[in-house]
Amino acid sequence: MQIPDKEKVIIVGSQTIDSNLHFHYSMSELESLVSTARGNTIASLTQKQEKIHPSTYIGKGKLEELQHLEEELEPDLIIFNDELSPSQQRNLQEKLMAKVLDRPQLILDIFAQRARSKEGKLQVELAQLQYLLPRLAGQGILLSRLGGGIGTRGPGETKLESDRRHIRRRIDEIKKQLQVVVHHRERYRERRRRNRAFQIALVGYTNAGKSTLFNRLSTAQAFEENQLFATLDPLTRKLVLPIGYSAILTDTVGFIQDLPTTLIAAFRSTLEEVRDADLLLHVVDSSNPDYENHEHTVQHLLKELEMDHLPQLTVYNKSDQITQEFVPQTGEHLIMSALNDSDRQKLKQIIEKMATENMDYYQVIVPSNEGRLLSVLKNDTILREFKFLEEEQSYKCKGYVLEDHPVKAALELYGD
Image (cartoon, rainbow, N blue to C red):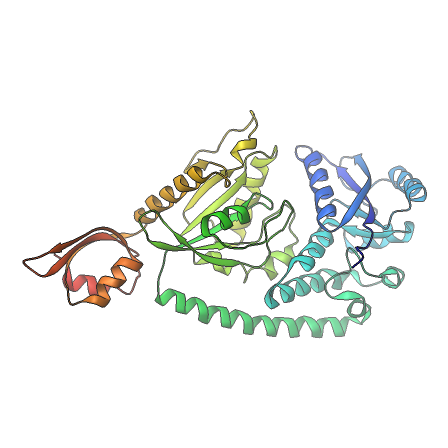
């Protein structure tokens, strides 16, 4: 099968007083996003200004410079590094020949490529339609140019050319379908709660190495690549701790700064998996020069998703590529490489320690004929002592159990 040529892209950024600190990194991240969307950045245009121009994002002189650059390089797309207002996008599109996109639309497009499950695809389409609805007025020329490629994946050309009523109907339809999917997942989670296990969720900035760590810890087959947003749909696998206790590990979608608000809302149910977690493993790429900003972005989004109260362990990944400037944050953390086996064992030991700290201690004498209860203690609790008492024909068991585990009622009967 012939691979289509990469679309040629000019990226445009505005450096304001507010964005001074992270501007250059933000532009290189935009270039990575373009590459992830199978585009090729052929030029980068930036402007320093006090604040973003209200009608055209960049000033008049810089816009003329962009028009000359467009004539010379003939790009397929011009992508702006911030969210454009509907009027900015309209004004720019009138003055430029290539298709105009902004950063949120690019992120939405990558999500459209990467979604695998039915729910993931529905979530993306919902976010795209909600984002595009206020931008439809006056887009006749733009829409007639859509012919596939970046910014057109997901809902597609025909849906965008339909009237607002049709799009609103489609939004309502998707929301209904999502309610059904969420209901199914809730039933599945309810089943998991009955067989209560310690749940760990991997969170972190996109491309921090979550899927690599997930695969190495759980021997799963998650999609693993040095690309932004390699994982979209949450994956859940078993993680066996050193003592033999099985915890549940969930890999989640990567966080990113300036994530479209519609996307946060749409993916809220996908991240519902994380809300049930007993521990968050916050994976940080310690080799990235902007790692501090990544940490703040993740914490901000966790707060927005009302998940900042959950216990956290910060995992500074990629320690083999660490820079001299790196200084870890205070608090519970581990500096490691997901590819190093002894580092992974150390991580499992810390998880086990944190798990016991969040559990209740028990000490019981269980008769040997209580086979089912003994089996549950072995499988569903962290068992520290399991000793046969010959005289009593019973087992002395000591260990840790989750506060809300169904077995607690039985343990109270045999407590010594």
